[in-house]
Length: 95
Image (cartoon, rainbow, N blue to C red; front, side):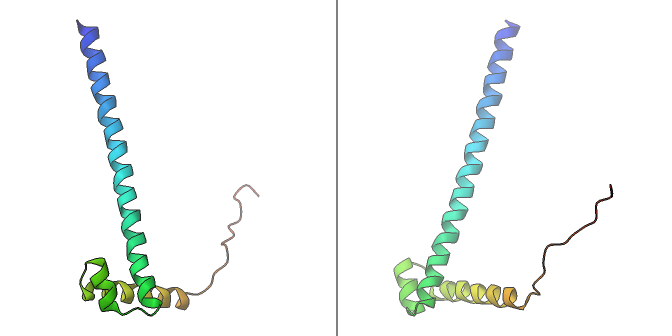
Protein backbone atom coordinates (compact mmCIF):
# COMPACT_ATOMS: atom_id res chain seq x y z
CA UNK A 1 0.00 0.00 0.00
CA UNK A 2 2.89 2.36 0.74
CA UNK A 3 4.24 2.05 -2.79
CA UNK A 4 0.88 3.04 -4.23
CA UNK A 5 0.72 6.10 -1.98
CA UNK A 6 4.25 7.15 -3.00
CA UNK A 7 3.36 6.74 -6.67
CA UNK A 8 0.21 8.82 -6.20
CA UNK A 9 2.15 11.51 -4.34
CA UNK A 10 4.86 11.64 -7.01
CA UNK A 11 2.25 11.85 -9.75
CA UNK A 12 0.52 14.70 -7.94
CA UNK A 13 3.80 16.58 -7.47
CA UNK A 14 4.64 16.12 -11.16
CA UNK A 15 1.18 17.39 -12.14
CA UNK A 16 1.56 20.44 -9.91
CA UNK A 17 5.01 21.22 -11.32
CA UNK A 18 3.78 20.81 -14.88
CA UNK A 19 0.79 23.07 -14.19
CA UNK A 20 3.12 25.68 -12.68
CA UNK A 21 5.38 25.61 -15.74
CA UNK A 22 2.33 26.02 -17.98
CA UNK A 23 1.07 28.90 -15.80
CA UNK A 24 4.42 30.68 -15.98
CA UNK A 25 4.54 30.26 -19.76
CA UNK A 26 1.01 31.63 -20.10
CA UNK A 27 1.85 34.64 -17.93
CA UNK A 28 4.98 35.32 -19.95
CA UNK A 29 3.01 35.09 -23.21
CA UNK A 30 0.38 37.46 -21.82
CA UNK A 31 3.07 40.00 -20.83
CA UNK A 32 4.63 39.75 -24.30
CA UNK A 33 1.23 40.24 -25.94
CA UNK A 34 0.55 43.27 -23.72
CA UNK A 35 3.91 44.82 -24.68
CA UNK A 36 3.26 44.22 -28.38
CA UNK A 37 -0.23 45.73 -28.09
CA UNK A 38 1.11 48.80 -26.28
CA UNK A 39 3.92 49.17 -28.86
CA UNK A 40 1.31 49.05 -31.62
CA UNK A 41 -0.65 51.88 -29.98
CA UNK A 42 2.50 53.97 -29.66
CA UNK A 43 3.47 53.23 -33.26
CA UNK A 44 0.05 54.36 -34.45
CA UNK A 45 0.43 57.70 -32.65
CA UNK A 46 4.02 58.07 -33.86
CA UNK A 47 2.76 57.44 -37.41
CA UNK A 48 0.51 60.48 -37.08
CA UNK A 49 -2.82 59.08 -35.93
CA UNK A 50 -4.65 61.12 -33.31
CA UNK A 51 -4.21 59.74 -29.78
CA UNK A 52 -7.95 60.07 -29.19
CA UNK A 53 -8.71 57.97 -32.29
CA UNK A 54 -6.14 55.34 -31.29
CA UNK A 55 -7.60 55.24 -27.77
CA UNK A 56 -11.13 54.91 -29.05
CA UNK A 57 -10.18 52.08 -31.41
CA UNK A 58 -8.22 50.27 -28.69
CA UNK A 59 -10.91 50.72 -26.06
CA UNK A 60 -8.71 52.61 -23.62
CA UNK A 61 -8.59 56.18 -22.40
CA UNK A 62 -6.73 58.89 -24.28
CA UNK A 63 -4.76 59.43 -21.09
CA UNK A 64 -3.48 55.83 -21.22
CA UNK A 65 -2.34 56.28 -24.82
CA UNK A 66 -0.61 59.53 -23.88
CA UNK A 67 1.13 57.80 -20.96
CA UNK A 68 2.41 55.05 -23.26
CA UNK A 69 3.66 57.56 -25.84
CA UNK A 70 5.35 59.68 -23.15
CA UNK A 71 7.05 56.64 -21.62
CA UNK A 72 8.23 55.51 -25.05
CA UNK A 73 9.68 58.94 -25.85
CA UNK A 74 11.34 59.22 -22.44
CA UNK A 75 12.94 55.81 -22.89
CA UNK A 76 14.21 56.86 -26.30
CA UNK A 77 15.67 60.09 -24.92
CA UNK A 78 17.29 58.23 -22.05
CA UNK A 79 18.84 55.72 -24.44
CA UNK A 80 20.13 58.53 -26.65
CA UNK A 81 21.66 60.35 -23.67
CA UNK A 82 23.38 57.26 -22.29
CA UNK A 83 27.09 57.15 -23.03
CA UNK A 84 28.10 54.59 -25.62
CA UNK A 85 30.34 52.04 -23.99
CA UNK A 86 32.17 49.22 -25.60
CA UNK A 87 32.53 45.82 -24.08
CA UNK A 88 34.29 45.77 -20.77
CA UNK A 89 37.49 43.76 -20.94
CA UNK A 90 38.49 42.22 -17.67
CA UNK A 91 41.95 40.66 -17.41
CA UNK A 92 41.97 36.99 -16.64
CA UNK A 93 43.16 36.12 -13.15
CA UNK A 94 44.90 33.14 -14.71
CA UNK A 95 47.30 35.27 -16.75
